[in-house]
Image (tube, rainbow, N blue to C red; front, side, top):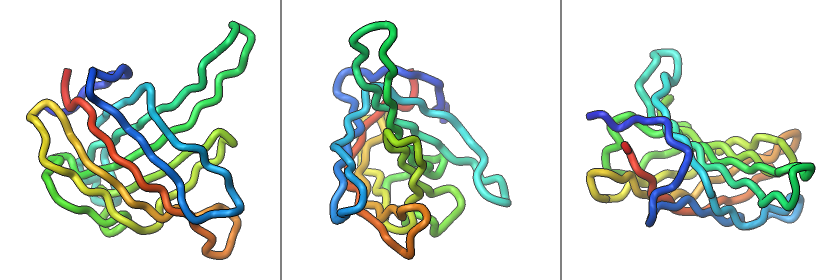
Length: 153
């Protein structure tokens, strides 16, 4: 299966969206990606084959001098992209992280990513992830979303 490419644009009908819940310490606006990158990676001590999907949301630039803020969601999934539910951090080839516009990276500590049936060209799914705030005692927020991206192109 040749599922991996490096592609930064979205095909029509593809998306990555997320919304945060249950946190008063960090404001997280709804996330809608306008670019993405899919790449094969090696995960964990045993160097398992995995698929990394990075969804990127860039703010619109008004002028050339304007700084563009960037937010990212990264999902790491088993390389075969088999349909099913995968618990975050239950295995080396399943992980989730979120980079907010403050530049900090927030790691998923629990929850699941579900890969749903899709056409042969796409990988489709949803996620419900508990994300830990850095430098806090088990303070988390929930990030829920869905995605559909091209596997190859």
